[in-house]
Length: 106
Image 1 (cartoon, one colour):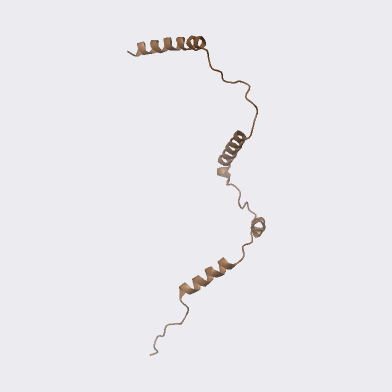
Image 2 (cartoon, rainbow, N blue to C red):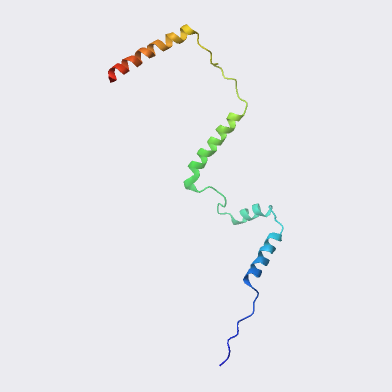
C-alpha cells in the first residue's frame, strides 16, 4: 500500500498577497475607461428606464438650486414696513373673523 503524501504548494496567503501587490503596483490608466465603455456599448453607464423620470426631476432640481446661487434680476417688488394705521386697518377684519370663529366653536 502506497503511503499518502501531501502535495507541496505555497501557502494561499502568500499567493493572495503577491496577487494583490501586483494589482496595486500596476499603473492606473484613467484614459482606458472611456475606451472600455465605448467598446462594451449596450448602454453602459446609462440611467435605467424606470429611473429616468426621477433622474429628470433631480436634474431639474439641481438646475433650480444652481439658479438660486447665480446673481439674478433685482426683485421688482420690495417689501416695505406698514404704517401703524395701515396695519390696524388690515388686522381689524382678521380679528373680527377670528372672534366669530371662536364664538362658533364654543
